[in-house]
Image 1 (cartoon, helix red, strand yellow):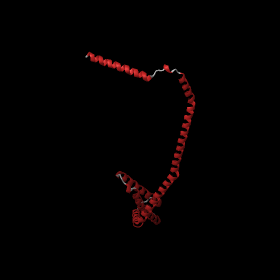
Image 2 (cartoon, one colour; image 1 turned 90 degrees about the vertical axis):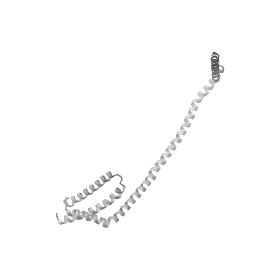
Image 3 (cartoon, rainbow, N blue to C red; image 1 turned 120 degrees about the horizontal axis):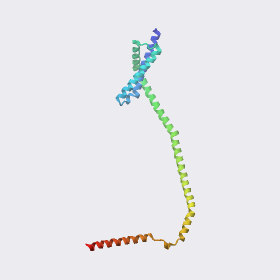
Image 4 (cartoon, rainbow, N blue to C red; image 1 turned 45 degrees about the vertical axis):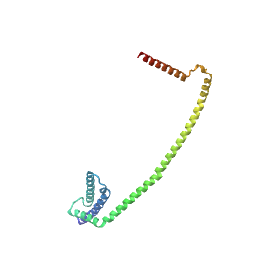
Length: 199
């Protein structure tokens, strides 16, 4: 391995150390603060460090064909320490600013979507529903009027036939029911008198 390749490898590992520091802070900002289940934390941490190891291996593969030397780990530690000493506060401020901008942008787009798409569709649905209900009421009234017009001759014919029917042949159901009730009451009284005389 030439000196140039060694220098490129050390420089790449320093940058990867800085990258790992940034990734750890980003991971802590979005995942670590919302922990609830221990097994889920372990799985997240395992996947996170596995991804970081694969990234370091990928960079090494392109720089020195993945030849591992002791100074590679020193360069990684130096890069991570440089990030903690020089760039941590700056990166965290930029990260918080970025999160605030994204949240604000998402809220603006959500309100814009609600105002330009959801609300017009809602109002359009309400207007169409109101128009349909109004039309249905009109159709109902027209149907009732047409039904009355169609049934009017039958009503007139029924009234005419009712006038020519002799009323004396019709029995008053109310009087008939009263007579039946009186007969049953008299039978009941006779039975009660007969039982009293028998005693």
